[in-house]
Length: 379
Image (cartoon, rainbow, N blue to C red; front, top):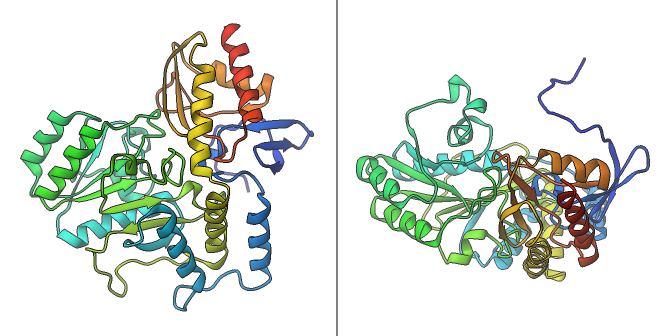
């Protein structure tokens, strides 16, 4: 049997990782400045993370959600405290797409309405409803398309108001990323977010903040939208939550009432997943990683801002989009093959996406800064 060939692959086979570095099967060392799409939040193989998972393997790895699991309670309590959202409830699942599916479903259960408003440039996942609110026709199959999903332009307040004027009484939820990742590190204006919140309250519409990539300290705040003091009805999270172990979460405002069978999952919130997520929160708190994201993000921006061929730098914390005056693919390949540095791209072909671990160190950022300077100066 062969693999179903849907991924364009670099000819690199990582076999070992530690901190912000990877080693391939030939012994070559690479600096990881992408973290597998912002998944690696506390660095590869952090000792506390490893210890927690190894100890849990000696106890119990999995049982279904038909029994009590005190690790889920511990995770919810720690997440509530570190995020400042202690009044919210937590539903655990396996991925960002699954978190968004459950958020959209919960919103519709809550108000009985069936339309969803999303925005240009968005990416919310590849599953049924999540892909229907993703702005990429290439990955939306005919079975996923439905007129209930309404697209509005990013940061366009006038069009937003027009959509609500036409469909306000039919819209169940608005889903928006705290910062668009796949869209090219696009940051919403505070005026845009405030208007969305105002219109949602006026029309009994649920506001869903997709913090799958922009959450968990990535932006220099626990969740990116918290910078603007916007209260979301539902928040979804995943990527950095488990530092590589599959886990997702839905943070739910107390106005939503739970009932048996309303949501469900087989693997969500299993023992190993909870331990991985608890370890991430422990490290984030003990090592002040949210503050480090702010400091190192600013350090990187200051170090590269005057380089040639850079048009703009879009950044919050360690969520960085470097817009070049050309397609970034050549620069990205040069960084990978000549300087052994992993970076990312986006749907905006000119944007180099930078998502290092939140505990990245100054000397590691200097490696990237110096390499990028050399590449850009020699284009």
